[in-house]
Length: 561
Image (cartoon, rainbow, N blue to C red; front, side, top):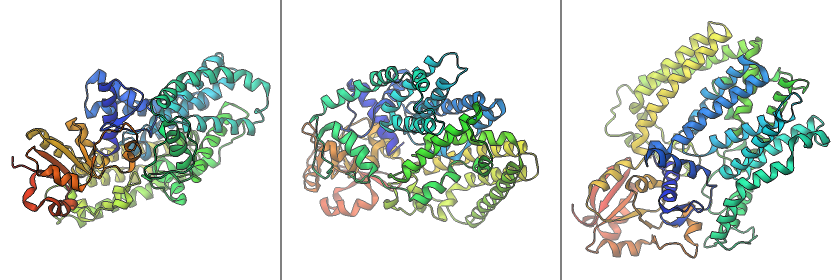
C-alpha cells in the first residue's frame, strides 16, 4: 500500500482519531481536493475491524460486488434473466473493473451511484411501475451520494444522460415526465445529503468567496475556490495548478476501452445490430445506455482524463453487451473466433517471455530489473513503462498462469458454441486475475514502502524526515502512524494546503535538514536511492547510517544504531 492507497487510508485514520470529519488532513496539512465519503466509509471499516490495510480496502471490495449485482439486476429487469446474467458477468470479469479497483479510489463507488441513478430514472418513468416515488427517492439519494464521492460529476453524468434520453424520446417537455420525477422533492433530498458537508468545509476553511480563474504557486483562496474552481473547472480546462496529473491522448482514451472491456469487447460489433427504438422496456434501456455511455465518453474527450475516469459507463456497456450476447447470433460467433485468435496470440507472447527469460537470474526484488520513467507516473498505469525484459524473470509464475489462461480461452472460444466460448472467457479471466495478483505481489517491494516502515518501527525512537513528495512514501506514514517533516515537500498535492494560514510547520529545506542532522537527537531520513548523492553532499557520506533499503528506497539515521 503506497501512493494514493495509503493516502486515502491515512486520511480516514486521521478523521477517526481527530474527530474532524469535515476537513481531510495529511501530516497536519489540509487536503482539500476530494469529496469525503470514501474517507468516511474507510473510517467506518476501521471502527468495525480495526485500522489495517486490508480493512481500508473493504469498502471498495464491497462496491465491486454491489456494482456487479446492480448491473445484473438492471439487465434482468430490462432484458430477461439470461441477458442480465451476461451483463453482470461482463461487469465482474472485465479487465478494467479488476485493474482499477486495485487502487483505493472511489471510482467504483461513483460507478454504482451512477448506475443506480440511471435504473431509478428509468423505473420512475415506467408506466407499469407500482412505486415511482420510491425510485425517484433512490434517484435523488444516488445523486446526493455521488456529490459526496466525486463532486459534480456524480450529479452531472446521470442528469445529462437522462436529459439527452428525454430529449431523444420526446419526453423532455412533457408534464407527465416531471410529475413522475418530482424534481423539487428530489432536489431537496440531494441538497439535504450533500449540502451540509460543503457548507461546513467552506466555513472551516476560509476565505469564502474568491472567483479568480488564476491558479498559481503560493496562493491560498480557501476550500470553496479550490474544490470547485481549481479542482473541477480549471482541471476540466487543463489549467489547474499544481499540475499533479497528466491526460491520456484522446485516441488512446477511446481505444483503451477495447482493453478495459476485454474479453467481452470482441462482441461490441454485435451491439450495433441491436434495436435502440424506445418501443419497449428493452429498447428504452438500450437507448438510455447509449446516451449514458456517449455523454461520459464525449465529456472526457474534451477534458483531461486518466485511464479509469470512464468507469461510470462500464455498466451501460455491460448491459449492451449482455443483451447482444443473449442473442447468440452471427456477430457473437465472429466475436468468439476473434477472442480465440487474440487469446492465442497473448498465450504465445507469454510463452515467448518465459523462454526469453529462462536463463536470466532474478536476485533480490524486481526493482533491480526495472527502469524508472518518472514522467509517466502522472498516469495511473505509468509504472507499466518501467517493465524491461529482465523484469519478467521475476514474473515467471504469473506468466505461466497467464499462458494457461489464454490457452483455455483460445481452445474454448474456437471449438465450441457461444456459451462454451463465454465459459472459456470466464475461466481465462479467473486465472488471469490470479496471475495479475501474483504479479502485484512481486511488484510490492518496488511500489510499497512498508519494509522501510517496518525497519523504522524496529529502530529506536527518532524524528522522521521524508524527502520531497508525501505520496512517494505515503505507506511510511500509514504503517508507522507517525508525523514527519517534509524535506522540500511543499509540492503537488500538499502545496495548496501548505500555504493555508494555519498550516503546521512541517516543511523544511536542505539547509534546515543539514542543521537538524548534526544535532544529538536521532533523526531518520526516508528517500529514494537516487537521492543518496545529494545527501552525501549535504551531510557527508559518514553522516549517513543505513537502516534499511528496499525497492529503490532507503532509510538513513544520523546516529549509529
